[in-house]
Image (cartoon, rainbow, N blue to C red; front, side):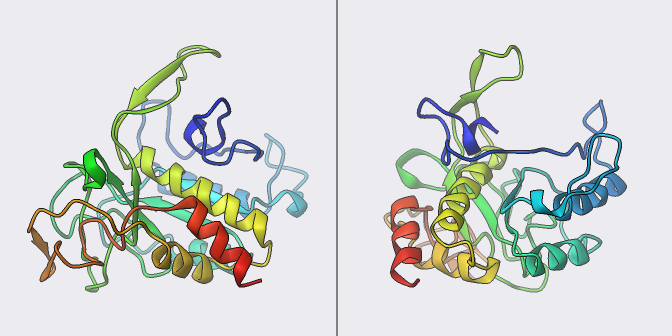
Length: 241
């Protein structure tokens, strides 16, 4: 959350307001039913007892630092509902490094999968790579995910550094929030297109291939179209209004 909306120079969209929904249990276990309930909550938020739904509080952007191993389609109707409601969303690509290891729902065609970049704008060594199960190029975009300085849950004033695509996804989600602030009619499909078109293509290449695409080419299944560029993305939104 600090990387998404934190102040004092640590958040991508520091002026945004936020809400959250608990999809994991107290031991960190993933609960499909809880994630689906959270998907419904984001469509029309309720109070903490699940009552008094108020769809005027539907968020403009949902950042998703969660996922399952690839090929899970149970969340697709949730994603389609978000898209229909005008919610922009991005998902962590995953931290398993291998080709064809993108997490679900990030591997689904209607999502924006975010990989992690590190030193010299290269792919972070842990960042999951595509293609997805249907052969689609994934991730679409990458963002900083190595030694990211942000808020800590230890105390109300603590900071920490952390690495993972759970750090890169909120960078991209914060940029989506800036884009949505520039144009409230922006759709998920249009936002995905703009992120890809404006990505910083000055990235480190290794000569590795995934899905038959060498990372000397862009886009590729290691780093996508490049590194998210907030200024370029918002500028393109404004120019196309």
